[in-house]
Length: 103
Length: 166
Image 1 (cartoon, rainbow over the protein chains, first blue to last red):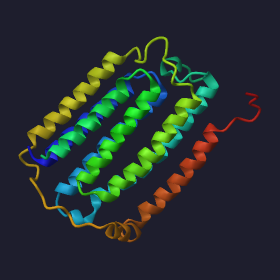
Image 2 (spheres, one colour):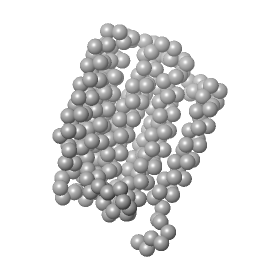
Image 3 (cartoon, rainbow over the protein chains, first blue to last red):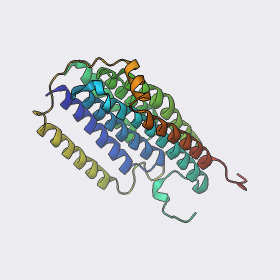
Image 4 (cartoon, rainbow over the protein chains, first blue to last red):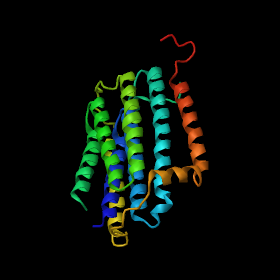
């Protein structure tokens, strides 16, 4: 197995774990943690392809990963702010109990 | 494949698994921090020093702290009375397993065409800085605007509403 295939397999596994967490947990914060894990797995793919692909000096994959980290940070801040806002409104962070669109 | 890679991969996967399976939310936050650290070390192992240290700064320094604050503010450390998994957990597990099966199959099928061992790219942080202010200057400005907007938006969303007596 080449090193690139190893990194891609690890990234696929982390992505699947994050997806399982996002789909099965009740707590909204843990769903966000699952989404963060999926974003990180995608970053690992980008860096691995940058390292083992052609023309690493062009920095394409590296820049993609760095911008992806910045966007993920913005997503985490807004997502956790929304969770806190919903908790203040409904007194729960349980997604199964958030079954109304009405405020 | 070096032994270091397997150790880091095991740390990352174990941290991720613990983060999605543990019952206590605070333990989940600690486990996901371990997974983030494993991913940062994998980045360093891939000769991507800048991305690795950015990962440590942003994820372990900021996102993990944000998650812990959110857990404290929502009293999420109390274990739910109906269990921690949602009613549709079996469907979610099946979907995640199917996604992993497809991804793993695709990687293993194309393993022969993936490029073998390559020499480490000679990229210094100086080159990354140069690229950020020349070729990637427009994305950089957009990310700056996005981060400002996200910060203001998060504060407004989480702020107490007017007339809120609590």
